[in-house]
Length: 118
Image (cartoon, rainbow, N blue to C red; front, top):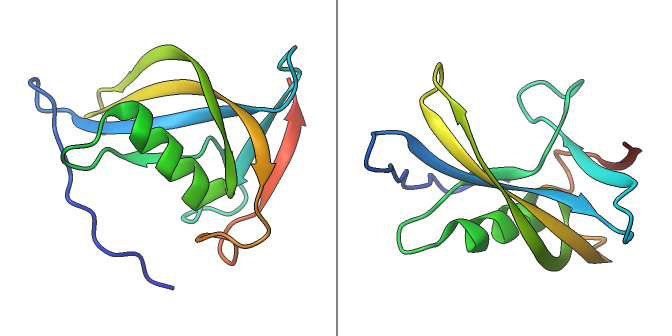
């Protein structure tokens, strides 16, 4: 499956806008879900991606998490923004409490997902 090319959005400083979720499933947040990178499958990463036009970072983080990790839940809080000067992007990061793990989701053929203790 080939993803449709996304329109990139930028903030006032020229940084690409991105959003991501740290997925947890228990109140003490003792485990987080990571997914494999499509570029380097040996790496486990936090699900996330670009913020689309007319989308706020929370909506983008939820959408990207469903697409990449196949999980649904509730955003509990914002952890703030992470800035990558080299790649010129800022990522808004949220904690998402997972309530449902989907069997079939957009990236299920190209990514693995796994719970990791932290």
